Image 1 (cartoon, rainbow, N blue to C red):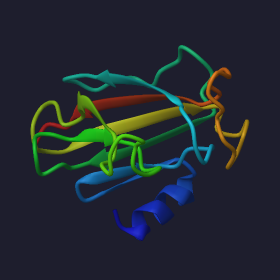
Image 2 (tube, helix red, strand yellow; image 1 turned 90 degrees about the vertical axis):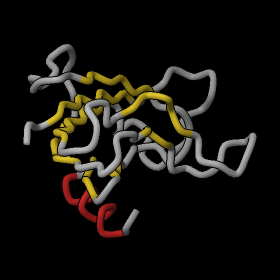
Image 3 (cartoon, one colour; image 1 turned 135 degrees about the vertical axis):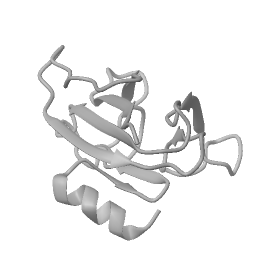
Length: 133
């Protein structure tokens, strides 16, 4: 990840893409957040199931057919590796995808810590679909 991508995400306050990666800026500095995914073979409409506070949309072009979500807070407690999630965000193989990230609750505890056992304040929905070549 290049610093430039973090700066671009800061420009819209939420997310930006880079070569083979994307960056999301959470409100909290540590702790769990809730993220849901909507992966589709075709274009998706913005979600209206709740009043999202932030929405960012961008293109992402993975050069491999496998891309996983990973937390950038640092290593997990069991190893020195980043924790990755099994969901493949490049589900249609290499190529260009459209990503739309919806966010709610990022202003509730900015730069704070989401305490375990407390209701999760930050909620995200990531919509992804491939863009035909």
